[in-house]
Image (tube, rainbow, N blue to C red; front, top):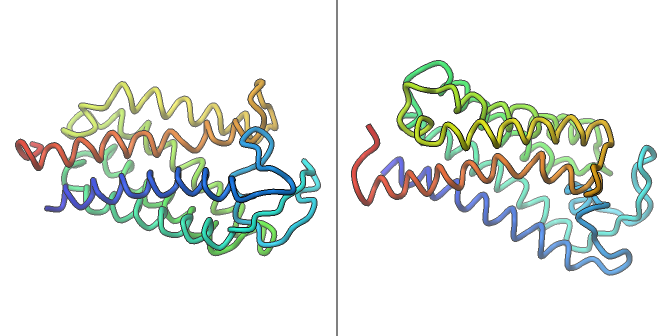
Length: 214
């Protein structure tokens, strides 16, 4: 039962986050939302105008309450899923680090949703850093969790996604777009965690239909 709930939490977190990114972005009119130009956080900004002195861009998100609610909800689901799945992820220190890091990343989303960037920037930035650093570190920790059945099955995927996410984080913070825009680079930094919890969540749900992870 715990594995089924964990898998459901992680899949719901991914679906809600991705759908909100698309739907809330489509609600933009002046300007149109761009995944290459705009940050994910721009979807949650509560005011309209030119935002960010370091990289000025026009921002106006009519459905910002929905996006901020999804930030909070997805963060809670990520953290809850990790706590519920800790038995499937154990034993070993690396697996424990992976669980704690996913919880930290989930907390980052909650913090970012409760403190939109244009309202309370410092807590929002802290939340973003929790998403970037622990969120991708969790995948590298999972790749090292050789004694744990679930991470062991996803070891290669975990390592690839973690390295990709951390590299993209460095490039994003350095304002290097590599041809996909700074906003695009941010998504490369953020999406690996959701890709991993989707794969892990499906595996957890499948284990409930076949045999328990051991």
